[in-house]
Image (cartoon, rainbow, N blue to C red; front, side, top):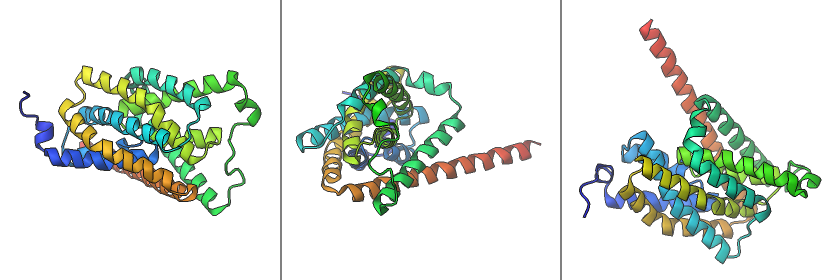
Length: 283
């Protein structure tokens, strides 16, 4: 029998499960990006310390990705194992060293790179939906290079390490980076990219979650409650993604990516204003 858990007590068991359901649905729909819901929701309602917030999100993402990938497999969703295998292996490596790698990169640079990726993704998906993109459905990398395993394997390994480290360290799921990488670089359709992303982040989330639990940067009980809710949520989200037309799913993903980009820009702007105010006040 365990004692009181302040991380859960502030939120309540029902509230934690409800957040798990909603985050699971987001992750299942968007290919594993559940953390973009878990992190701000926990920050708002649970008041979990920042390191524990990210670690707990990573733990909960295990259930999201496992259930989402299983639904994709059972419901006829496609997975790109050619690109996905390298991403999976790289994601496992990134999961082990995520915190260390991320800590060496300036936070501002990480934010700028993330903003660039999600805004580019939103622009491509919107242009695809409008029929304005001449490269619609085509990879940014030439077919000749994609046909060579000597090129695909190292590229996907490096991409997997970067995306896996980012996801495991920050607890943001990684779908918002993995899905665009598969769409933009390898020309995967959105459904295939989402299914491949979910599969990629099963081992990555397990590795990242274990590392966070060992370091004490995750709440076991809160992570368990989020996972309970994430199971039905991820199943519904994945089924909904498979039911949606690729154009509609592209608009949903593009809108979400645009919202995340705008949110990051606003946060950077607020942080800069706060820093300037501190400098003025101290001067």
